[in-house]
Length: 161
View 1: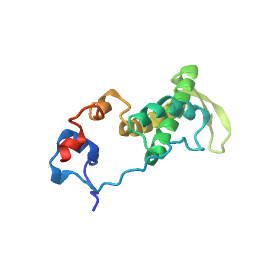
View 2 (view 1 turned 135 degrees about the horizontal axis):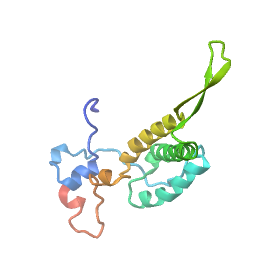
View 3 (view 1 turned 120 degrees about the horizontal axis):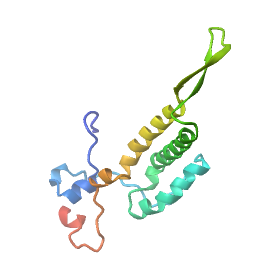
View 4 (view 1 turned 180 degrees about the horizontal axis):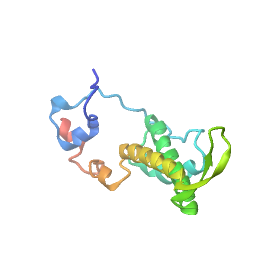
């Protein structure tokens, strides 16, 4: 049975590492098969640059698996869109001349107002933060994650035995 309300459940591997009680650890949690982690074809060039910069390290640390491709690709896309919007705001400024139309849709003049790219920037920033948190991509997000040292004899197996 899956929980439907409240905060998201802590991943099982973190429960093991944190020494949670055995009865609170899902030993039957599905695990992704070892498989190639490839960027989806729909990623644009700028988002693919973001993928190439981060994916190899996340995959090596087993944070990014084949099951996570869509969520991580969404993060890459949001980062790309955020960068694009930020470039527009930098070039045009936060306040710009906006067209003013009458009720017939005819241009009647201009007024100063908030750059519409700021809305795109805010939306992409929110998406990047939300998806990035799932992969520990900020210092505060990483503070809650622990990656086992494979050379440490006190690893996860010790906690479940």
